[in-house]
Length: 464
Image (cartoon, rainbow, N blue to C red; front, side, top):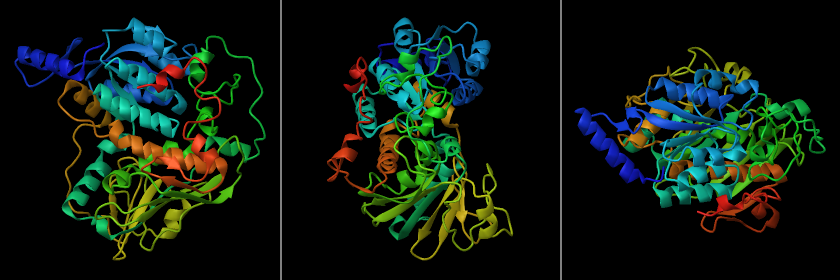
């Protein structure tokens, strides 16, 4: 659909007026956005179900490079009449004029070309996190968002929940005084897919017989060529530097997002790496600690953010830290201790203030509270639309997305820089103005990705 967002919203307004209500409509019908889905299995299926539950969407097309795989069965059964494709480029051509938005929910390294192709057609886009595989791709997606004026949203779902509204209100009203921030910590200490190899990967996996029906060329997309292996598919791609963004790209968006946004962190000046175990040049380490150094910004002083990953590589928890229960709003177990919490530490964050106060919280939409308290916190506005409804209502013109690429692009770039330090197993310095790694040509080249990226035939997506 080659209409601009302004034209689209104008059409919605006319339709709403015709209905005699304050609602909106798309060309499909009252209060429905025609959504095309790129990726329909695993997490993508969770996203599709969440979109469906809003009551605001019509699933207009399904696209997956492995339509014959069992992970696609649920979506194909639920939407038997939706046109099906293996190549997003073919889908966008065939569905021209029949979709309003595209949800890109395929592997990390495949987000970029599908997003760029859709944005160039004037379509709204939803992208699973992290936004893209490389720093350069994030830059290009932010430039495209600005040029084409389309609605964008990244899928860090907690950015529409309690944690978002609480952070926003507390910083704006001074409950959290950013001029008094002292140190930030985020962590994820659960087992990851690549841990099964115990850091002993010495080569890429050998070529295997490819299952019938996979469009391998489109699955690879812009990535450098690799022969098919089961160790790349069904989520295994996240293990490999050439395809994934590791634990940081997977969970950083759910633990760091509100600190990054409301503390105005921007891009780091340095990324230090230490406590590395199981490093090799193919898959992510078994564990490491990254320290991101951020320069002062306005009222906020210069500050470090420590990221801990690895099953036993846990941060030292501050006094008064409470055991956290997964998914709870104020997730504090009364009477627990930091020792209790450390035994089963779920992904989360805490940050220290100059007066000695420490705030702690979990991931996603979990609210934060002061360590050493009973969990009572100052009031804050409660969430309205969830992350999926927020995107669809923004396409309709009645809301503004909470995680547009202009916000989540720099956050994802932080992850990309951390992945470079992990890949090279050395600290790097970064110039946030020039957007270049300082004094390290190898690291600087990785801002564009692995050698051989983009693959021949996929260069067109790297022009805005």
